[in-house]
Image 1 (cartoon, rainbow, N blue to C red):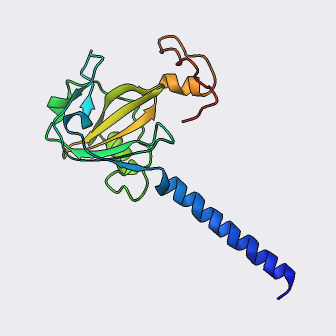
Image 2 (cartoon, rainbow, N blue to C red):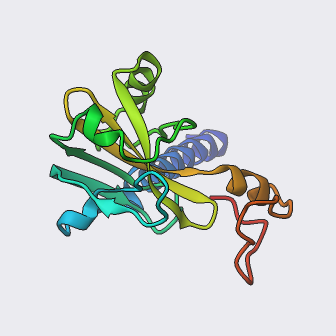
Length: 181
C-alpha cells in the first residue's frame, strides 16, 4: 500500500471519529434526566402575579443541561382544562425548541402545529428563569403538556450585545454580552 492511500484512510477515519464524537456530544453527552421533585415541577404564573404557583400534574419527565440555559425540556399530563388554565398568563410568542430524538415525549413540530391550530395553548411558567430566558408551558386539549426554556424579548436584544431596552431588567453584574445561550 502506498503512503498516499494510508494518509487518505487516516484522514477519513479521523473525520468519521470526529463527526461521531460531535454528534454524541450534541445529542447525548450534556443532557441529564431530572428526577421529579413533586408539585413544584410544573408551575404557571397567574394573571397579574409575579410568582408562579404549582399546578396539578402527573407523569413528569424532564431533561436539562448545564451547557446552555435553553436546553430544558419537560413533558407531563394534567387534568386542568382550558377554563382552569384561563387564570394563568398566556405566552403568545411561544416557539418550541427541538428536543433530542431520544426524548420522545417532546415533539417541537407537533407542539408548534398544535399552538397554530389552537389544539394547544401556551402559558408563562417562570419569567426570567435565567437572565433573558423564560420557561414556557404548552397544554394540549387532551391534557398532555410540555415545557421548554425560550429566549425572551429582552434576552434577544442583550444577547446580541446591545444594552437592555426600557422595561427589561438590567443585565446581571459581570454579564458577558459575548455569551450566546
